[in-house]
Amino acid sequence: MEVIFIKDLKNQGKKGQIKNVKDGYAENFLIKNGYAVKKTKENVAKLNHEVKKKEQEEEENKKKANELKKLLAKETLEFKVKTGEGDKVFGSISVKQIKEELNKKGYTIEKNQINYKNPIQSLGFHDVELNLYSDINAIIKVHVIK
Image (cartoon, rainbow, N blue to C red; front, top):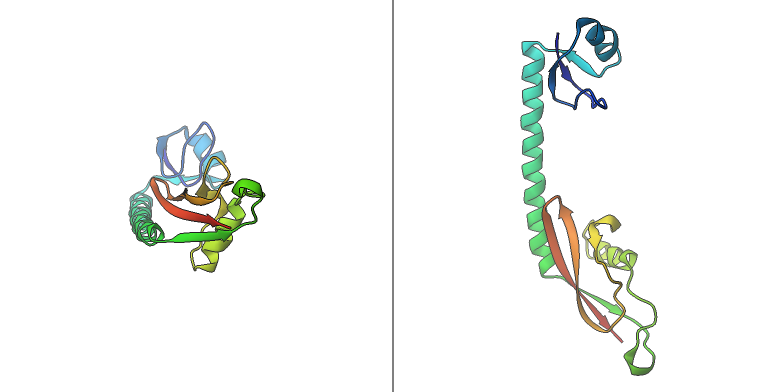
């Protein structure tokens, strides 16, 4: 019997996959527990509709991410810090501080989207990468001043 998986099932199938399985397994486990439905014209049409809808959402999200990237490229975040002898910065600029500053400016960026390897511990301009979408990254300037 051919079934369409509606949920991921480890070592069996992923959501949206069409697979041929034994009748008893399909009826008594997959369909009964909500992992799959029988392959019918209606269910295949529903699957195709869901795939198209997902692709449209994906395109829309990419468009939004590209627009946000253009806006963020113009932004410069300024942080005022205390310094010691020789302009040595006390502490560093954290991911949380960058997130809060971006939120103040009206951007909704999560902490896990902010990507920088070394903490910002010196005066001047620094580039910070933001992961906006799977393959779309933006770079913002962070200006650290006394």
